Amino acid sequence: MSWVIEGETGKWELVCGLEIHAQVISRAKLFSGASTEFGAEPNTRVSPVDAGMPGMLPVLNMFCVEQAVRTGLGLRAQINLFSVFERKNYFYPDLPNGYQISQYKHPIVGRGSVTIELADGSTKEIGITRLHLEMDAGKSIHDRLPDATLIDLNRSGVALMEIVTEPDIRAPDEAVAFMRKLRSILRYLGTCDGNMEEGSLRCDANVSVRPLGSTELGTRTEIKNVNSMRFIAKAIEYEARRQVEILESGGTVEQETRLFDERRGVTRSMRTKEEAHDYRYFPDPDLLPLELDPAFVERIRRSLPELPDAKKARFVEQYGLTPYDAAVLVAEREVADWFEAAARGRDAKKVANWIITELFGALNRSGLEIGRCPIRPEQLGRLLDLVEEGRLSGRLAKEVFALMFESGKDPEVIVEERGLVQVTDAAALEPIVARVVADNPKQVATYRKNPKVIGWFVGQVMRATKGKANPQLVQELLRKHLEEA
Image 1 (tube, rainbow, N blue to C red):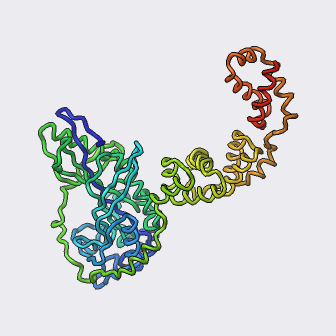
Image 2: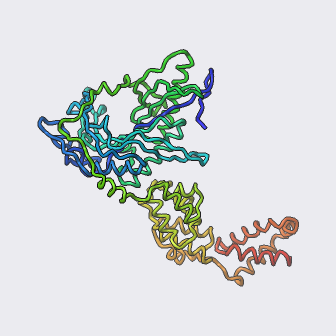
Image 3: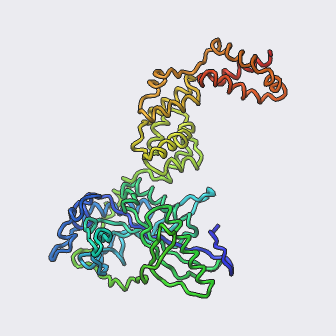
């Protein structure tokens, strides 16, 4: 079901495609040996090639090519054995050559697809049009000096993969779902770290609208460099509604490039949308066409890891997880590996539940990624073993978990230090149960009418034992005493 905009004259449909720039994980740049280290002092990671010095020739980094092929295979896309690097000509201060080396007519990767999961549990295929390699530009800095713009060329020449989708997206949430899925795939493959804050994953959204039921495409605008998942949905929704208002008032949508103002939640005009001919593409005379050996592609294919969709299907089949829980756990490769390490030889559903509720909650509150989690998978597994063995109640286990997260200590150590072992001795619990029953005659009378009231008695005993009593044993003892009362 499409996301529908209710206008004054009727219903409208969103048509959206994305262009994603993903920085390739590589120690060196696309055409030079300069470092790609993030956060270095301005202009300290620049070679003569990156600076556009006369006479300097680019040398293709084949590791970046391998990363692009790996990504294409992960996107179930066609790998083109013949591709060409071209010059995209435009003049801007942070582009010292006056052109960007990119790919246009002959990209390294052709058509593919990505499956996204929607909120209602259904799935949808988003087509991939192409993936091509290109060099990044430098960075213009406007806020350091009041009357000048500074240029940092550290990013100049860094390898980017531009991934272009088909206009298959019909709702802002679908765009976010696609970006999350793409980021997950890239991180599984190890081809891009997906860090939007550092700019290593950037998104442009091409947005148009049309009357619901129409098959003709409307005039599109391009929203540039949206840098967070939250803003992607907001920018697309605002722009679609803006276009509907223009069309319903008798105006026409201009094909242009727009920016998203994060503070005001609106898009604003940046410049007239360029067409390919504006860039005067032509093959780069310093770079030969790239011709790949099929054996090279096959070697990369054989080295691919298990990707999110395949891992999700396996988690459902092998561990009996729900599709939702499996999808949550496989979204990040580190989380999936963490789960499997903790679940080895245990009830995987219980492990999944603890990770999704307790562990994720603690990580979110602490602002930590799973890689910096103070609890190791085997420690969580041993905590659940203590519950399974009857040495800890579920309530005490949560208390121990919190202490483990604070200290990194093993669960057995915390249980011993705090004296938190569950009481499973009936003789020790008998007098406590008897006292609770004797002290509450009104509740005993209520129990005779409504046996569910036993839960209240269990709570009283658990409170008296500071949560250490075995709940199942407490229920058994209570039933006996309540029947005799």
